[in-house]
Image 1 (cartoon, rainbow, N blue to C red):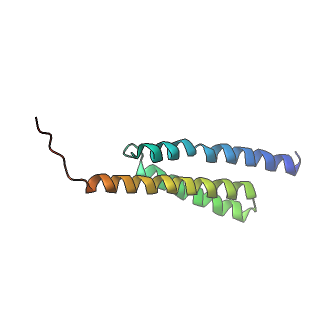
Image 2: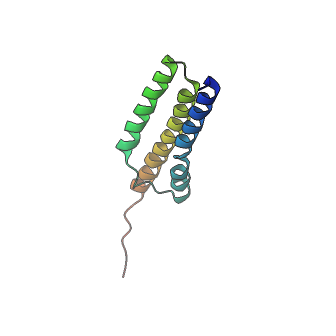
Image 3: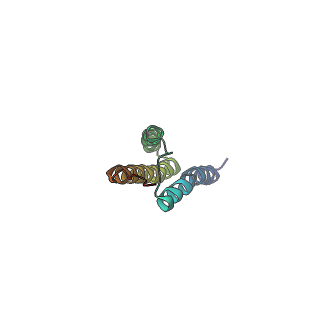
Length: 99
């Protein structure tokens, strides 16, 4: 295959993988709830993306570097919202229901 076609396939794959995090980010932002999000899973996936970015740099692959960099930013944003919303929720006083 020609190098240009391979690059386009790589960019398409990276774009699809990257945008897969957008719905979670939007839902978390709109609902202001993130308790169902696994902190550990997102830490591991960010570490994996950092490794992919390093690999992409070493083999000089723009699609790998760009897709994983943007996806990592999206995942970091999701984790930031999780920490923010859970910290706010824990700062609220326990409300006692009066019957």
